[in-house]
Length: 221
Image (cartoon, rainbow, N blue to C red; front, side):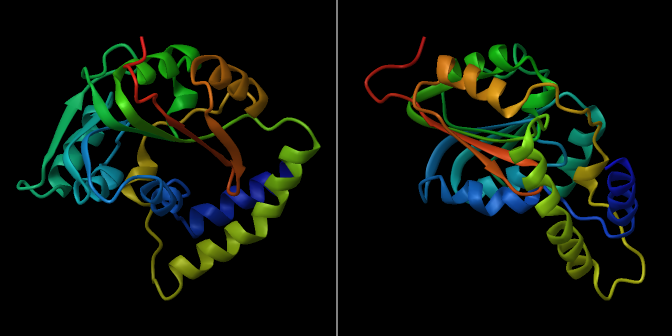
């Protein structure tokens, strides 16, 4: 297994592509055509923020890395309804309420329960939380899905880099990373406790998705 992982890392280095951006289209499909105020937690270089700006009245991109925010501002049209904030999640996030909160490949960097609780608190009634996350694999199913993703990952990397003389890593892939500590079962346990009715699903390319709609009747406390 370790040799396979090492070979995969070498292939990805030569044929880089953004596994998180792969889920941006899916994320946008979970939202209404037009939304109000949006918060993207851990926005990095702002790829998702710029997509959300085409659907939202305003978007706040929050990140704890000044270098990534500088790049995000450089890449974002000054006329876009976007604000970038240097902020550490979960406690330092700009206050809501927000109609949509997105969090892509960031939750495993944070204390899970505290982060989900803060997201719930900052959502407006009827608002939507969309998480694309990374979990620590455990058990036969997790490892089987991980293995199934290997040839698809290599094919996708080859197709996306076909015809390029030199493969370049997307800017979003230069942000600091860490390995996830919680398994999907553990994340699901916290989600059910804090976000009743949340939908959690395993996904390809070593990701999971979590979708939650805040109650319409009253803002969560």
